Length: 64
Image (cartoon, rainbow, N blue to C red; front, side):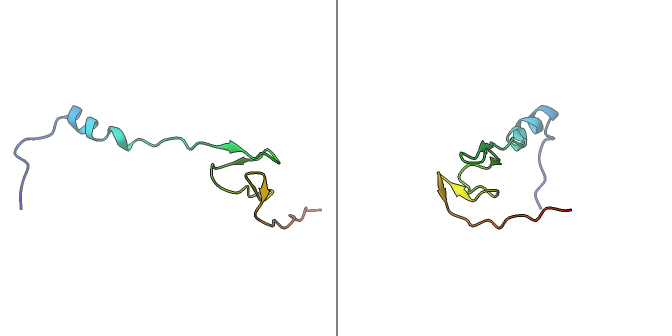
């Protein structure tokens, strides 16, 4: 089994890990109801995508 010839320094380890940082997700607002949705996906609240209804959403029951 091979073994590294030299120890990696802290700076070179950090440089190789620089692309592994978590990135914030981009969010858009639904054009019909204004809820926050992921881009390129249908709204889970009203079922619209690009101003067209693509999903039929059942009404949520309210608690009494």
